[in-house]
Each structure stands twice: as structure tokens, then as C-alpha cells.
Length: 488
Image (cartoon, rainbow, N blue to C red; front, side, top):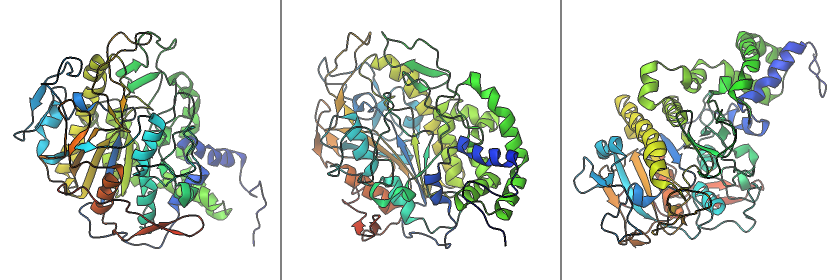
């Protein structure tokens, strides 16, 4: 009987050991691989309208006035530059720079009255990622995830579906972790009180790079501040996990890693056999199993998709991210969170109108329209709930930060945002809730992060009496609010 010793694996060659260690290139952190453990096969929750949910998060704060709750009759200083256009649903207007979504309004609904109490980016992220209106008592707002945090919605869903036998984890976040420009990591996206083994699985296909570049690179990049542009160009390269770059990796350094990748591909079979023979720890065996799955490799390798597919989605980080989400739905993943843009990409304090018109709305409209079309064509739209939200909305009043920007923008506003829902049983062509004449506060049917989270849980078939357990095995109710009425 072979025995193993700490720090070594008898009979494993140096090359094989290096290859196994290189799994870190894939974003397979050891504390995330528990989600890959083989579990007793089970169907998971049942009875909902959806089998999967894609939660699209627009970090920074989507301006409701410029997107889904336009106020063309508002006074100067509130009214924006864009004009509304009619959608395919009579009575529902959206921004003129979202023509693809306007044509597909039969598939989606709007909630124009979601509200919470903070204008702070860090706390706003936390609330909208955990589905809570208040932080836990241990929250400090210092961009440091803690074991005392509320679990993310992704972790809650992943836990509820953890018994499903599958190659892939039940909750996946892509293409990055939402790292702040200061280097701090945004809380609210992890297992928190459930324990780190319930962290979602992170596909780190979008390297952190230079935090002062925003947008859907490579074709829709823009500097964080007009008057203080980065000194170096945006060199980020979107890579599927089989080719993923470590944080800070740029195109100039990529060539040094391709030989290792090729070797890893050639040796996958050897690695898998060696893992069994030499009794690698279960984390590494799970990582190797993930690599070896053709289903997984197909879902991840979006930059090698057929050219017409890439063109429909857009050959940029937004398009590739939503294409990957579509493939993960096909593979049966219950929850996929897609962060469209690095941390605070949608934080339009200045130069708002050219940025939305030229850099942010085009890739979003294109990729999201392609996602809806593909889900419909594959018969998966009815069983896939798609939700798009931010940490908050934007102020009614236009303003300018003259030291940073050439043009006007809007500041943070937690009191109101529009949240977009599609598929998964959503009643298309529906608007729920309304705001006042200047888009500042809800005037009817106000909704909270708890209501949004409950809507996702209900759509996925999680019972309203279900609970999750913290790392001390104490039960906590999953539902902290009621699903949004009239939506599903």
C-alpha cells in the first residue's frame, strides 16, 4: 500500500508536479474547489419556472434616466441628452441606444422601483450581491470579505443545488472577482457565514490589469478619468480558463505561458492517471477532472467559437462573457453571475453621455440581444431567468467633476434603480413599479434587494421555507422578503 508524505507525492515527476501546480493559472483556488466535489446525485430544488439564472451585474451604477426609466419631460438639469424610443411593446420606451433590447421587449420586464438606503459603492455592492437591505453587524466597508458576511446569492443558490451530480459547480462567477481600483476585494460575493467551501466558483478570464481602464475591452475601452488618463495602454486579454492569465498578466507576457498550456493539454490524460495512482489530494483531483471534461472546455473556450457567433455577441469582454454564460446554461449550471465590466465600470460621474453612447451601451445591447436570441432558439429561455442590476442608480441632478472630466454625469443614488428581468417565466412586456417625475424615488410598488433575491430563489424552485446553515450548523432562512408580485 502506497503512503504519501506531506509536501511530496512519490513517483510524480517534476514536470507533472509543475503541471499540477499550474492549475492555479485556471483560477482554481483551493478554497473554491469544494464546489467540485462529487456529491450524491440529486435533482436539487424543484417546482420553479427556471433551471438556471444568469445574474448580470453592472458594477458602478447604471443610470436609470439614460436606460430604462427615461424622463424626457423632466426639467433642465435632470433631463439627459438621450431620447426614448418605443419598444416592441406599446407603452414601454427605452433609451435610443438600446435598439436590440427594444425589439425584444416581449421577452423582458422592468422593475422601476428598486430601492435601498446607501449611496456607497462598497455597501451597495454588498447589498445587491447578498440580497439584503442592511449589512451584517460585522461589516466594515473596507473591501475585505469576512467570515461574518452574509452569504452571496450565488453561494445560497450553490448550496441549494450542491447535491446535483455534475462536472461543473452549481454557482459560477465570471469573468472576474470585482476588485476595486485600490486593490481591495469587494465583499458580498462569497460564502461568508456559510463558510468558504460555499464560495462560488470564479472563472477569472478577465485579468485585473490596470484598474484605470474601464469598459468592454479591447474595442470599447476608456480611461477612468478623462483628464487623468492612464500612462500605459489597456493591454488586457480576455482568456478562457484553459488559457487564463494571472492578475496583471498582459498580452506581452502571454507568449511565455503558451508552452506550458500546450504541455498541460498534452498531458491531461497523464495527469488524470497520475492523480489516481499517486493519490493527489481531492482538490487537485477535482481540478484535473474539470480540465478533462469536453463539456467544460467547450463552455469556457469562447474566444475560439465560430466567427459568426463571436460577431453576434461582439468580440469583446462583454460579448465573450455572455457567450460563456449561455454555454454554462446549456451545461446545466444553476446560477451564473456575469460582471459586465471591472469594478465601477458603470460609475458615470462624468462624460456620461459619450461613454454610454459609444462605449457601454453598444456592447451591452449587442451581447444581451444575442443571449436572448440564442436562449430562445435553443428552447432554454423559458427555463433561464436573466436578471440585470447594479449596486444603485444615479442621481436625478446632472453634475460635473471638473478636475476629472470634460462633461457632465450623475452621482450615486441608492434610492432608486431599474432592474431588468427576462426569461424564466417572466411576463414579458411588463413594467412593475414607478418613479417620480425626476426619477428620484419610487412612487408605487417599491422593491428591495430582498424582493429581488426572493424572485430569483422562487424562479429556481427553492422553497420559501428553505434554509442555509452557517459554519456552526445553525439554520438561517433563505427568503428574507417576498418575490416581486406580477413579475413571474
